[in-house]
Length: 193
Image 1 (cartoon, rainbow, N blue to C red):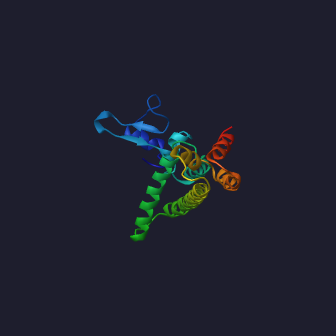
Image 2 (image 1 turned 90 degrees about the vertical axis):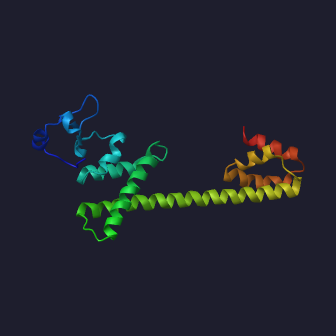
Image 3 (image 1 turned 180 degrees about the horizontal axis):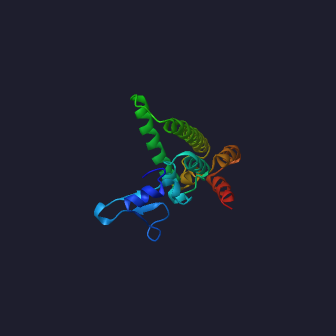
């Protein structure tokens, strides 16, 4: 893999671009050499080449990093791409800490990737906090329900555990008016409508 490569060098290597089996930017040498060349700046701009384009240089790399930041969390490969990026960041950081001279581009890449990493870490921390709050709310509501109504059947407890935090808060208020397990079931059935 190489960020860029001139047509002259590609010609001297005797490589052939593989547009039929692969895509633009991918070349194979004669079979005796058993090698290929990926020219990153020539790759098509799409999500399939995103992680490779992050390894590019200059504008190609900047655009790829922006694309990565803008990918929705629901994009199926985003976690995989982020894991590859974190691996690259780790390798660069280790080289830097070992005193190896990094190119200016690599130092800039560390800075850019670090911002993505920190944003993801903050998002994960916030998700963890929300999950922790949801678990605490569930435990509190279950304790209140047991105290008010007695033992709660496991299938009803599962339905309560699956409620959103907002619905748990609503249940915490509503349970003050419950007189029986039937009141709780009626409340839960209204939530699923």
